[in-house]
Structures are given as structure tokens and as C-alpha cells.
Amino acid sequence: MKRYTFLIMTVLSLLLSGQVWLERHCPLYEGALRFHVRAASNDRLEQELKLRVRDSLLEQIRSQTDRADSAGELEESLMEERTDIQRCAIDCLKAQGCERKVKVYFTKERFPIRRYGAIIFPAGVYSALRVDIGEAKGHNWWCALYPDLCYNDDDFILSGKGLKDLKEIFFGKGLKNNKKKGRKNGK
Image (cartoon, rainbow, N blue to C red; front, side):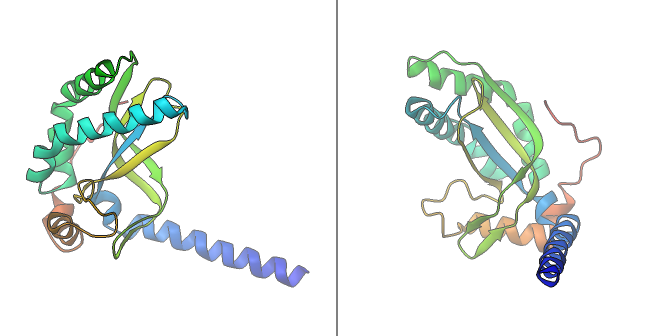
């Protein structure tokens, strides 16, 4: 029994060490910008509202994501539009006959592993544009704004821009442009 306990503890330690190493060395963590929408609750209506807000916001910010050459550039652009993004979410809710507070901010948060086609985003801490609806205690929805993966019709196929963005994160300017001085969390 002691032998199995030791073996399990060793394997868990190696996995944890691997995750720590990955988060420190993989350019994807610094080169990506995630989009995260949290519903007010798990009520069916609140979940439907979350998806409507998501769709409205993705439409609102589409031109910025199409033009962005790095996560940092996209974050700066969206930060300038944060009030408009919040207004868009509130207007979407009002159009559905709902009054909810909406909080829009940038943060760093932990995301679980996610597969996009042949690409796997490892679990870890990423920068994110976060939208909290109401108390934000419901199930959430997320995607990657940079590289451009939010606008795919099929979760298992990378768009041309998404593939280009990903290559730039690992091999080109996508990471360099993301390293900004004085990065602020908008909480």
C-alpha cells in the first residue's frame, strides 16, 4: 500500500511540476486573450440571456478582433471600448425585457483545458475580457478572442485568421506586441 501511495504522489508531483513549467514557458499564456461571459444564475432564462449577450458582444467587437495583430493590441482596443461593450450588453438584456447590472473588465483567470480542432489550449491562467451579468453565479461561456477562435462555426476547425494568430504567438510578433508595460486589471 505504501508503494502505491508513493507512486501516486510521485506521478501527481510530476504532473503539477509539468503544469507549472508549461505556464511559465508556453507563449500561449501571454499571447492569448480569452472572452468569458458569466450568467446571473443557472436558471434556464438566465442561461439564454447569457448566450444572447454573448452573441451581441461578439458582433459588437468583431471588427477589433479582425484587425488585431496581437492579444495586447486587441486588449488595448477593447479597453477603449469597454463602456460601449457594457452598454451593448445592457441594451441586449433590456431588449429581452430584463434589467440586470453588467460588469465588463479585464482580468487574469484560470481556464480549464479546451480543444479547438487540432489545437489544445492547456489549462492555466490567461488574460480575459470578462462580462458578469447580474450576480454572475451561473454557468459560464468562454472562447479565445486572440487567437481568433470565437467566430468559428465548428469548434473543431481553426479559422484561417485563428491559425495565423496562433502561428504569430509561437513564432512571430503576436507575443512581442502583447508584452505591455504597466498592464492593468480593470477590476
